Structure formats: structure tokens, C-alpha cells
Image (cartoon, rainbow, N blue to C red; front, side, top):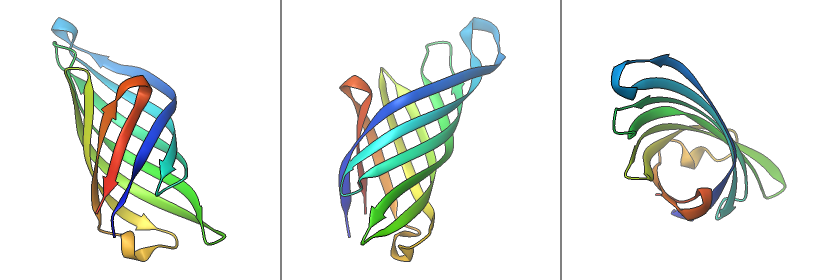
Amino acid sequence: MELKGTFQITDWQETVEQEFEKGKKLSAALVQQAYSGDINGNSEVRYQLYYSESGDALFNGFETITYDKNNEQVLLTIKHDGRFESGIALSEFTIVDSSHENNLVGKSGTFSSIEGGKATYQIS
């Protein structure tokens, strides 16, 4: 089973938690997203980010995606490990829990940002 589509960031609230020399910092972000494609729903992501002096970042976090399938609400929990380099965010992730689609647990995926606060996703 392969799932593909896009998501749109609808809100991004980031707080700097610690600053270091040369512009390096640790931040936390709470992000809202709207999914379309094989998954149609909404998500909330909590990221921890480390920014280097170049402005690139490493991040990890957990995302919960809520969507309807066969008249049931499904909740997926995803663990992210990503990076932001040269204006592009990339993440590799694993589905760690699912309320109704247990066949998705353990599946991995990726996302890659595109213009306008959007990203493409693929789960296989």
C-alpha cells in the first residue's frame, strides 16, 4: 500500500528556547497542517529544531493526523526526523500508532517541501 499527496501548513507557531553564539539556536514549533490526496484530513505537529549559524536546521518531532475513512475517524501518530537545508524541508518518518488502520503501523514515509508552505508526502 502506498499513500501519496500534499499537505499545506495552515499555522506555524515557533518559540526560541535557547540561543547560542553565531545565530545558533534551539526552538520548539507547533504546526497545523491540512492534508489532501490519499489522506484527507488535518494534523498537528510538535517539532524540536536546532538551527546552525547558516540558518539550516535539524528537527524531530511527533505528528498526529486525523482523517475519516469508511465513516470512521482515524488517528495516526508519526515520528519525524528531518532537516531544513537551502530553503527545503525534508523528513523521513515512521507511523508509530494508528487508531483504526493497524496495517499502517511501522510503515515509513517521506515529505519534501515545495513552494507556498506546501509539501508532498509518500508513505509505503
